Image 1 (cartoon, helix red, strand yellow):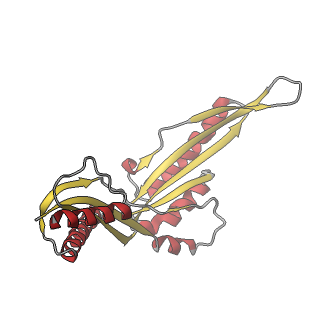
Image 2 (cartoon, rainbow, N blue to C red):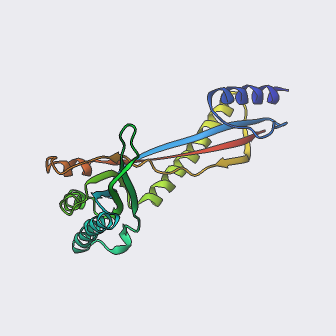
Image 3 (cartoon, rainbow, N blue to C red):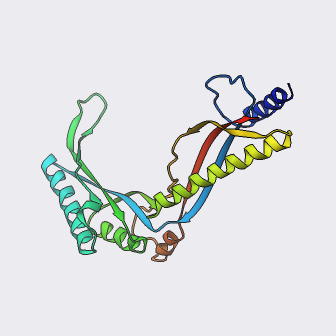
Length: 233
């Protein structure tokens, strides 16, 4: 009877304080915990997403201009030591442009061609120079800059172990607090988390060259979470 009361108190309290989803009601004494963790680590890599958008009277002219800008940028990247497998550029978006006037049919006035280039930089220190070279070669839009860490797997494993430890400590503390004792793990629920990569924007080359230092200070937040059901003796 005492165990049932303890289990009811612990389970009720945790269900109210956490979004723990119970698939089916357990008939034995138990405690449910949610272990969480968070690591903030220095970024040492970046993924930049840039784009060229060109308007021209004909579709061919628009495509040619966008292709030339991308080709020049890729050449600069290769010269900087970035290998082709770190560059994604196989896309083209071609859209007709119309002029609309009241009581008149739409008039075709040209075409817009746009291409995106996504580059993975293994050296964060090169980020500012790469952005400048993109703008110099005709790339006219920086969509985003996602900071990353080259040790993602290592840090994710650390965060996972920290979440497991947190779940264990909570379960032990709660059981002892109600004069109970843990009797092993009954169920584990785990859904892999992804690192939170801070995104920075930069639209033109007019910013100060000191901006490069601000990128070096970026951090990647890695979080994890595990839900555990422990049996009580």
